[in-house]
Image (tube, rainbow, N blue to C red; front, side):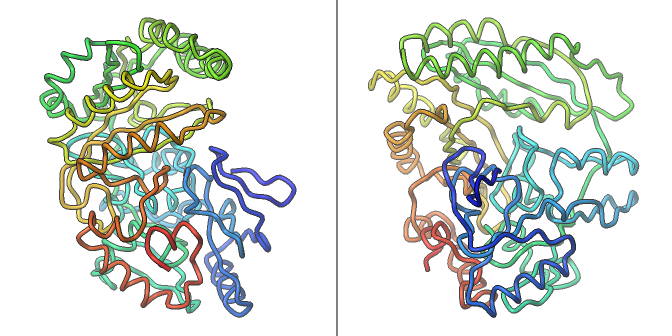
Length: 437
C-alpha cells in the first residue's frame, strides 16, 4: 500500500482512490470515534491494511482508516492456544509475538505482508487438504458497527454470527481485534522437486493427500510441474534450514531480481518468455530443508503482478487445469507467470470459497505492466463452467446475482449486513457489485 500526493493505491497498482480524509487510529476507541464522526458527516468509511488485495475491496472514497498503528498482542493463553491481536497486526510479525508462548498459526498463505484483519476478511488461504483458510482459525472478533458500538463475537457472545464476521469482506463493520485458535509451534520438512507435469496430474489427488501441505506451480510453455510438499514435525525436530547463500540465489536473485527483468523484457519481446520459463524450471524448485513453519509456508514476492484465483470442487481440479493449459496453447499467449495449484478443506464460513466443499485453487498471474484482461476473462469462463468461486481479494468480474448462486448462505450474509449496516456506511463500489447496493 502506498499514498502519493493524497492518492492511495494498492500493491498491485490495480486500485486507487483519493479519499476525503485519512485517519490513523491507535486504539479500538480511536476507530470507534472515526466511525461515529464519518456517520455524522454522511461519509463512508473503510479500513485498509497492507493493500495486498487486487480488487477494490479496500478502496475508501470517504474516510480511509490506516490501521498501521493498531498492531500488537492483546492477550495470549499458552494453555488454550487462544491469542488476541489488534486488527492491523501484520502476518509477518505474528510468529515473533507467538514465540514466547510456544505457539504458531495453524496454516499460512504464501505471502505474509497482509494485516490479520485484511487476510481473514478476504479469504486468504494456504494449502493442505486438511486445513481451512485463515478465517477458520478465527474464534472471536471485536468490531465497530455502523452504529458506533463495539460488537464482540465469540463462543460466548453472539456465537451464531462467527461464520459471517470471520470472513466479512469489510462489509459488516471495522474489525479492531481478532482472536485466533493457535497450535503448538511446529517445524516443517519441505521437499521442493520438479516432476513431469503429466505424472503430477495423473497422481494429483494422491500427492495432495499424502502430504500435510502440497501445491505445484506450472510455467506455461513447459512440461514440468514444480511440486512443493511439506510434512509437519514437532518443534523439537532438528532444523536444517536453507543455506543463506542458496536461499538468496533462489529467492532474491532468480525469483525476484532476474525474473523482474525478464518479465519487463517480455512486454517488449514476448518471444523471450518461453525459453526463460524452460530455464526457470531447471534452475529452481529442487531443494530439501526443515525449518520453522512460518519460514517454510511463506516466501518473498517482490516482482509486482496482478492475480486472479478461483476455487473449484477438489474433484474437478485436473479437468479445469487441463482446460486452462489448452486455452493458453490455443491462443498462443506468452504467459510469463506460472499457474499455482493449491488445496483447502471444507469449512463453514459463509463466504469462504471452500464453504461446504473440499476445494482446489488455480491462480493465474500477469506482470503488472501487462494487460491481464483477455487472459483472465478467458480463464474465468472456464472457472464458471466448473462452479468456481473467486477469491474476494483477487481480480474477477462476478456480481451479486452470480455469486448468490455459488454461496448457499449468501442471502443470510446480506441480511446480516442489512442489520449491522443498514445505511451502508462501509460500502464502496466493489461491495456494491458483489453484495448489492
